[in-house]
Length: 460
Figure 1 (tube, rainbow, N blue to C red):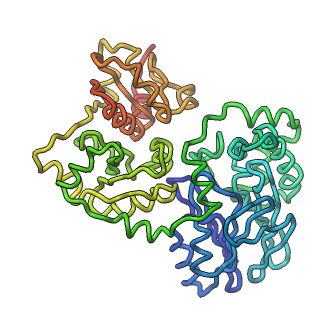
Figure 2 (figure 1 turned 135 degrees about the horizontal axis):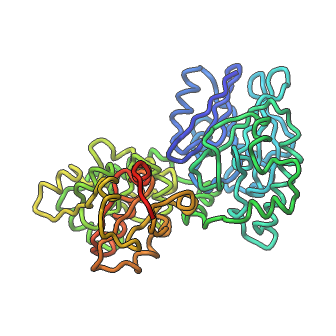
Figure 3 (figure 1 turned 90 degrees about the vertical axis):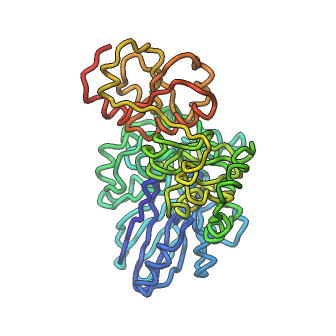
């Protein structure tokens, strides 16, 4: 028996490859399906089933593409309603994979179709449970992503989640391994641990949601409080996962379109086209095309693209380092952005060697910033999230989370100098690109972010 977690850091997402006696099950695959197909081929095994724990909101799954390529049926839990052929399993149903089996456990709460899959070995011993977005490590799935009528309020779903965890998951053997669909960094929960698997026994010790003495009312209050607004692309991803989508290979083929510098210069002036620079934060800061948005491939690229680009149908032209064009297109497709119309042929170097204007972001070291004199405290912006800010921040800094940066731009005075930082420098460069795109400000980015600022003594 082979159980392999295929973890994608950018999405904080875990897919699973399970093989036994020449048969394979895939759980919650990404849209790029080649890793699963190739792994099965190397093992001379056949993909027998594709299992989905629910309709994912934060990424486009690869269930349809795998099924189309291999003929493997797609399995969902009760209450799932798809526009394509699928198996809608029933609670307790078992699916044989070689000498082992996966038992469907219906666990409504995160969504009404949310389902876990219990792995049993050839001796019928319970080995692991794949919990999707029902149970995370240190947390549970947020109950506010499946609202649509009076019967699916977040409070109602939280109550369902409490019952699912208490009645279906906590009675399982303490020795089993929990394999969730997400880890720390995902927007599908509030406070996940920086782990990708753990024993149920340990989670009963450290996960607040598994406290034996927690009442249903306490649970509902806890999981529904402090929920930030979900990214705007979530509903469109759910729709794609329900209704269907184009194969990613076709998206790449039509999007991998080189655009010469002169055509690019005409297109970039059109209001319906976004120039997306995916190079490193250092390269972008040293020079970029005026009006371009920075979201670098080096960080949480796809989630930030989904959060900050409002329309999944947005026409996008990529500016990348040489050879990174396909990666950018593929990673955008993970969150349903399929309308890349091409990339700047020759990249930023081609633009820099022309006679057209370039912009830069002024950067200073954390040491220079801490020692700077005459800084107006109201002119320091911390673009980390609220929880990070509460743990610690530079005295006088204002909390201006990146996800909501637009609403803070109107408060900036164009005649002032202001400083901006995040944790390590990635988000602050994204924010700088948005602010510079909106207006011309004297903006100074602090390299290394709060991680570096903390290393120097400062006083309020």
